[in-house]
Length: 214
Ligand SMILES: *Cc1c(COP(=O)(O)O)cnc(C)c1O
Image (tube, rainbow, N blue to C red; front, side, top):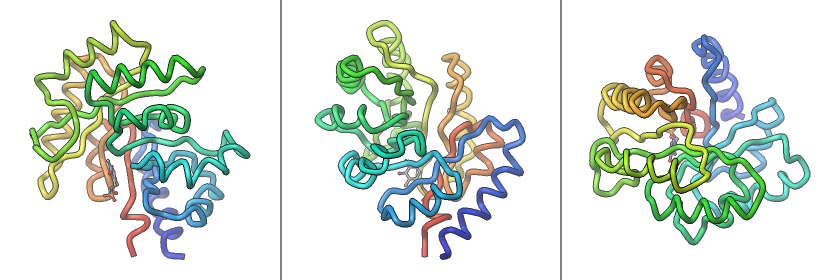
């Protein structure tokens, strides 16, 4: 099983560079079946990333009903307001909060259940048209809204650097924004750049293809 060997070797490397022991390794299990995921859970892994609410429900609901403590789920894909009700019930972390409208919807649904979900605000650092994320110039307004008008626990910022570009300047920029807004956690770094991301202060890395690609 190649993916399991990939997981084991990345985990080993991760443990060696996670010197401050403050970084969380998220296995991005989107598009993967639960048989594979279970193999990784059986190695003691807890944090998993998914990008679609319905797929997550179908794959995980059964398992989590039986073993609620065995996994923490991270939503890393775009969240539509009509999926918010399901999202707050199944996810522990939402990395893709990016608008006031979404913050309002999340707050309403979260207040109906007693669960403490942690949120990242996704920032669209390069103003990419096709990409989600709040623009830098609107970040302050969104964070301020969440703080004063909602109970959402915003723990940090998340970014997805432009494809094919050197990630370093985006990681530095996101770290600087985090400091400016006194936020603690940073969700950045994927298969191709997670080592750099950790050096730049990331506390949540999201790894998919380095584990699962054939
Ligand atoms: C798919 C995805 C990842 C994983 O990317 P890899 O390059 O496959 O490790 C990380 N973050 C987000 C937001 C994703 O959609």
